[in-house]
Length: 281
Image (cartoon, rainbow, N blue to C red):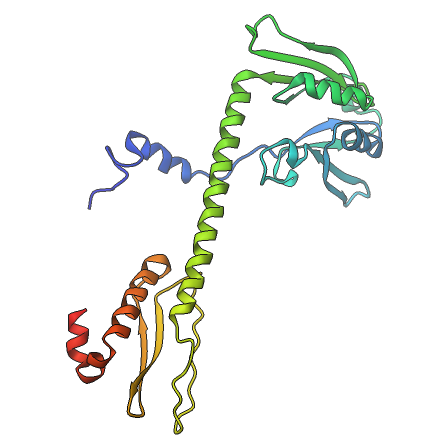
């Protein structure tokens, strides 16, 4: 059978590359190490001044602490968590180590934002020291802006804005908003469908002096193809119906509703000649 995702399919000529990418092991940036003099002081700077979150604060086997901070989820797309973002590990290097001399230097770390000026104003109000106010680099052609700020140890970082990144972020936000709205609408439609299907099941039981009976249905999903019914055929006759539509979900529920309507409208025929009724379906 020809693969539907081959040439001319949904994925087109990129199908092979996409399949290969899906087979690769998961890989993403976990954290970067920042050498600091005091973990608590640095953590307060990132949390209180920059608005980051502490995503890890745990003791180490050596008796120290492992602290990782990351931008808050609000600074990224909604639906993400700070714990799922790349973080900055605040590490105190041993006395006399080469890393000790790297404290207070240019870290080479760059934080990307969609509005450098807005972040600059907010962080400045919180007491963050900027060694370079927002400006356009000579290579930016008017489409990039950046600033440089320092932490409590004098470590310097870049705050950068790229128009292309901003447009990409806005596109992703719109796409995510559309996905959330589609999910909300689907959940709303399924809730209504569940209410409708629930009313298709018997709302009352024909009284039978010689029989005690009951029925209940718990579909695997919001709606499904399971069906039961109690038919009052008159003359102290009762029809008990039990059916299961092949499949699950909305498609099976629609078939179940069609079966219920047909059976209810032709219950006399179904009782007298069940084989004819089933063949007519």
